[in-house]
Length: 145
Image (tube, rainbow, N blue to C red; front, top):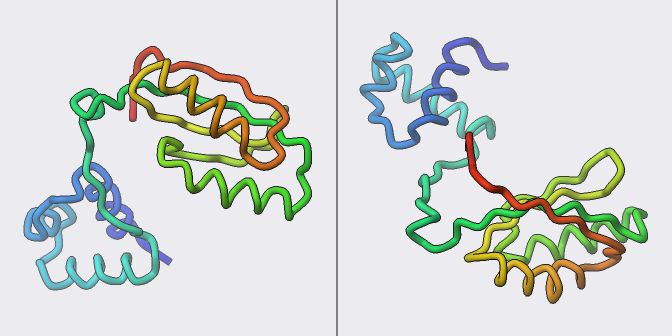
């Protein structure tokens, strides 16, 4: 179990994974050693899985975001495993969520532009195991990431 201080540590790190340990300790009212011990515990117990850079996708020319609803023709466990394995290999698929609803999966896809997305959809996503249909929603603006 974690306490309020651990939750604060996680919140501060989620906003700034590069915060200095001394600054983090001050923010949660601990000295450096206990803060470091808590941080290690949170990492060891998998509350903190890693640290990530905030990427400027405009600069990298990968700012086109589409959300794709995917329906499968087969939802038995073996079919889901095959889909999960293959979708994980697609670099442009940033996120993949199994959904309880009218469709089976929701993908967040990042590409250079709509033309690149169209090729990805027709040649890769639609060809994934047991895909019966897709529906695309293009993001016009990211308000909160």
